[in-house]
Length: 181
Image 1: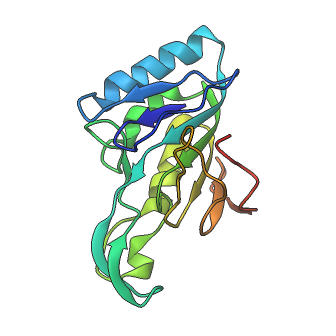
Image 2: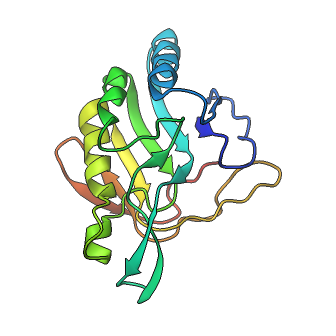
C-alpha cells in the first residue's frame, strides 16, 4: 500500500501488504523505484493500493449545479504528484503489478465533461496508468469518504467505481467489491 501522508491517518497492517508512506518532500521517481525494488524482491505485486488525495480545481460542476472543487487533475502522491505530464514514470512498474486500486477523490473524473472550460482528465490519466504499468486499474470518479479510526479505511465507494483494462475497456464495478480492508 502506497500512502501519501497528506491524507491523514495510518494504514492498516495486513499480512499481504507492505505499507510505504511518502510525503510531499519525496520524489515520484524515488518512490516508484522503491516500489519496483520491493515488487521485484517478492516476484510481483498482485495488488498495489494507492491511498492519497485527488487533485482538484475550482469550477462550475454542471452535474451538481454548483461551484465546487472538480476532480480529475491527478493524484497528490509525493511532491511531484502523479499527472498526465509525469505518469510515464510509473512505466518502471510495468510487468510487476497485476492490479492498482486508487483510493483518491475523483481520480477518474473527466472534468471537461462536468465543467466546460476545465481540462482535468482523470479518465485519460487512468488509461495512461494502465498503459504504462500494464496493470488493471480501479478508481472512482467521485469524492470519497475516508474513516481514520483505528486506521484509514473506506466503508463504501462513492460515485462510479470503474475498472480500466489494457485493451482500453472500462468496466463498471459494484461499489462494495473492492474495499481497502
